[in-house]
Structures are given as C-alpha cells and as structure tokens.
Image (tube, rainbow, N blue to C red; front, side, top):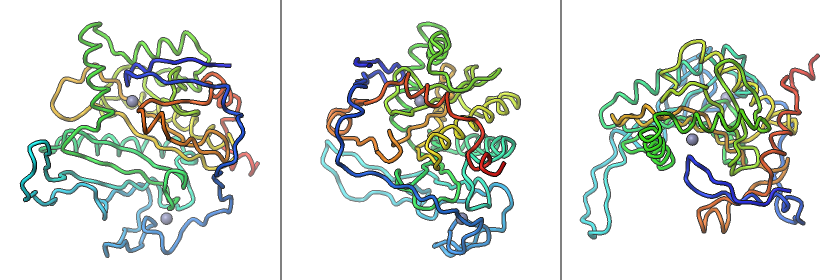
Amino acid sequence: MTWEERWHPLREEWVVIAAHRQDRPWVGDTVSHDVTALPEYVSDCYLCPGNTRVSGRSNPKYDQIFVFDNDHPSVDVDAPENQRPLADIYKARPARGLSRVVCYSPKHNLTLAELEPEAIENLMGVWQEQYTHLGSLDGIEHVLIFENKGEAVGVSNPHPHCQIYANNFVFKTIENEARISRDFFTKNKRSIFQDIIQAEKSDGRRIIVENDSAIAFLPYFARYAYEVFVAPKETHPSLAAMSKTEISDLSFVLKEVLVKFDNLWQMPFPYVMPLHQAPTDGGDHSGFHFHIEFHPPLRKPNLLKYLAGPEIGGGNFLSDTSPEEKAAELQAVSNVHYKVEGKN
Ligand SMILES: [Zn+2]
Ligand SMILES: [Zn+2]
C-alpha cells in the first residue's frame, strides 16, 4: 500500500498517491477497444497517400514520412487582428503561429510501436528539422510536438501521426519547466533533470528500459498510472542538440516503451505523448533537459482515469496507483510486440 503525497519537482506541486483505492467498487463507464484488423490503405482517410483532404489538397503518394500544414489550424500566420476595444482587465492578440501534421508512415494500420527502430530514427530526424526550422521563424517562441493516440484521447483516425504547434507563446507546462530548470541550474550549476535521473537510478525500481545514453522510467511523482518519461542521459535543451548515436539509443528506448505499453493489455495503448523541448524564445535554456512524456489515460484495460474535483477543481492530481507497482508491470511484459510474437 502506498498512501502519501509526493513532490513533483518539474511542476512544483504535490501528487496524492492513494494506491489503496484502485479496487474500490466501480459501476461507471468503461472504454472498449476495437480489435478488428485494419487495412494498410483506407480510401476515405485524409492521411493515406494519394487521398484528397477536406481542404481540397491532395496528399502525395509518399512512401516514408509526410509533413503538411494542418487544414484546421488553431493558430495561423493569417489570424486576424483583434478590433474590439476591451475592458482593462482583458487582453487579446492574434492567434499567430503554424500548425503541422506529421504522418509517420504511408501505412494506415501501423502505430509508432510497430515502426522499425530505423524508421523511428528517421522520424526523430524530421522532429529535429521541424523544431529547428519552426523555432527559428520570427515570433515563434515555442514548438510543441505531440502525438494523441486512441479514441480514449479523442482520436478517431488511427493513421499514425503527430502534430506540431509552433506558437507565439510558450505553453504553460514548458514555461514552468523552463523557469524551474533555469533557477535550479543557476543555483546548482547542473540540470534538475540530472538529479531526477540519479534518483531513479539509485532506487532502480521504476526504470523501464536503459542503454548507454538513453533511459525510460515511470517517475516517483507520476500523476498517471502508466506515466513514463523517456530521455537522453546527457542534458540537451532539444532533440536538435543530440548526436546521431544518442538519437539511435533514444529510438531504441522509445520503441521498447511503446511495445511494452501495447503488450500490457494486447491492444494499441492510448496516450498523449508530448516532447518537452526548450522554448525558442531566445532565452538561455542550457539547464533545460529535453524529454518525452507519456500521459496514458487508462489505469486498467477498460477504465479511464477521470480528471475531476482534485485535478480540474483543485489543480493537483490524485493517483489511485502505486508508481512502483505499475513500473513492475511494465518491466514484466515482453519487449517483442504481441502482433510480431503472434506471427512466430
Ligand atoms: Zn490512413
Ligand atoms: Zn516535462
């Protein structure tokens, strides 16, 4: 039984771990998962090669990775100027920025977990280019790359893809991490994330995968049952600063985490996966340690973690599971994808 509050050093907030509550009686909704096999190509998928999107533009017959500007951007270079005068307490400005979609593969039925490690390396190359290019544009203060996967997080199209938001502001979580990292770095001359890696390594119970230069762990302060951080061991403000060897090591660790997620319940595992990279606002971010975070919404095969009173109302997470137990589950499952295993 774990029943305590744990400090989240990158958010500077408490997480309540009440792991004796997981098996409390439950009569609410469950999330079903579709196990029917998908085809490689779907004629009305707006991401499949050669298809026409709602904007009327057609996708090329791409054979690897395909990047395009989002047809329904939340921010745009052409966002209108605001006209109406506002009360002093309110402020508004044009929603300026760029929003892109990155298709990982022409195959509709693949997931990131099923891509070959080399294909994941190529994808990281594209992420590096996009971050560097978009981040260098005038007025772009931050580039957020993220994948939403699964109906549990509102994604109905399974075609493997992620999104990029390049904005004229820094998203709040990154702004906080950047400030916390900078203050720690100024005071201690090292990255705060190095202390987290050290703490995870010396405890050892929550490490999921590790190689020479990359590591994945379910952090001590996890807010979600299967929250996992994937990171290079050296401090780099972004993917763009990493060497080829480091990218290759990171791809390997990322792939293994993804495979373990899918193997957990033999289903495509839903998640929100943001890349936390330093702002591109011209500030000094040498203490910022690039990492990938997984926020999976499920805590059991068919059971969502609902955000309610404590999370939405109060702003702190209440977790019903023990990070050590959930890490042990992930450690125990195979690192060979169940679909591949099934074929042997
Ligand atoms: Zn498709
Ligand atoms: Zn982070």
